[in-house]
Length: 268
Length: 323
Image (cartoon, rainbow over all chains, first blue to last red; front, side):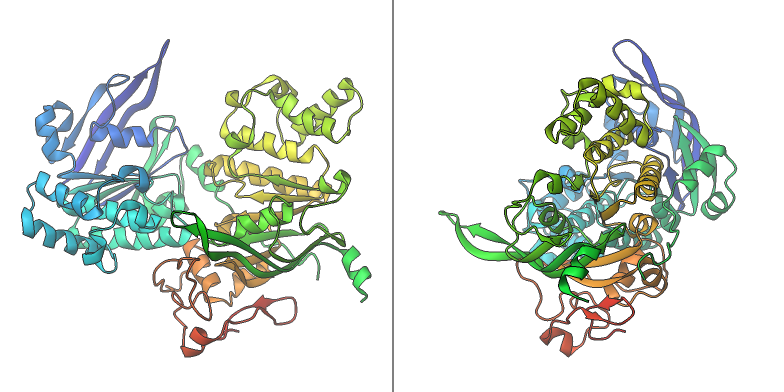
């Protein structure tokens, strides 16, 4: 299903002033499309992602104007009950830090089965079988045994795989991944990128990847949007934006990527 | 070349350094095993050299930095700084100790939140008696701020009034206060935004050029290392697996692990296969530590640990299959 954000403005009420975190943002993600959202910290990219699924605490946040159309329905107009069916169901979220998003006192099998039962995907023994399938699907070795593991027994990369398994458990149409690899090592980052790519293709997901890493977006997204001070300043095909940036800010952001200027041998 | 002669030319020599941490378990916290964080590492640094140490988390790169800075005693081996042995206890005059300074990853954690920037920069001057009067100290603090691209007015600020990038600049200025020769930079930009990180890298490059400092840069990101360093040491599970000039390493990596890291940093795309994760350092694999993930692994890699061998000129690799 496509996501269509129209003229979204989000404000935060601080003690004395109003801070506008997202200013009049319009963004469309077509079905089966991977959209990368880049920008520096504080540019409003996470707020945008959270606002789409109404995960922002209101107050202090306030959605002033706009619509978030998902498959034609305005998510901002749904009742909390209706929203529950969409959030975690049709739209799933993968957060930056897997160790804080998993329950430390519950086995990962239990947490995954809870997801499946909550969203009425499967019950009982079927849920258990599906959990094993899911873990195998995201590339966890010996999934039968891993069901009984607690999050602290898993490495960072494994935890992020479990988070992704949970996200796809409810067969979502849209997956929002907010800095899915920032907490991981470069080698694990690459493995997660390969996994997300494969799942996106196999499940026909729409994917919104939020990251400050151009590298991640370059490898994953076919379209990208650049955010700056709460506004989307440039949207386009990833290759096009990276090779021919139009906005001044995009040019600056690309120039800030570490460049390898190979120095000559200083002590030959 | 005589030993004395060689030592004076080199800034730093790490000779067969090993660091073990005891592993305790059970009710009485008895020592049940040892973890080799750093295993028989050899490294040398010349004056003015910028050496990068790259590897995944837990590979021992920070431990090695702590050993060099004298924050941890070594279990075996020797570290020499300008020919003098630094091993265990650091019984050296403060004039030499201050020549090695550390800059940590997270500037928020390394600055005292209740201390103004000016005072944080002035304190090392006082401790090492580098400025005699208060007026002299103020002048020096302003100079230091200027060197890292901050206005003199920042001396009156508290760390919380600074952005992440500005805090990292202050941390660098504080390390520079005591006029070091060797700066150990542990993940200097990984807590920062790309944009801010690029500025910090620029500051570091300029300082190195102007003052002929030596850097030991630690990072998991080959792009950061490559943009700053002239020589690179690749570390895996406590061992150096490849050591080469940056240009050589990027043009033609020898060790399969280096290839993998380059691929991850988006600097190569040959489609190297990655089979899994770093094994537990408590139970390192027999033979070559990388064999569990290596696409080239064969029987020999299981039985023999490859030594770090020199392939002249000035290139070292620890692999049975390469070059």
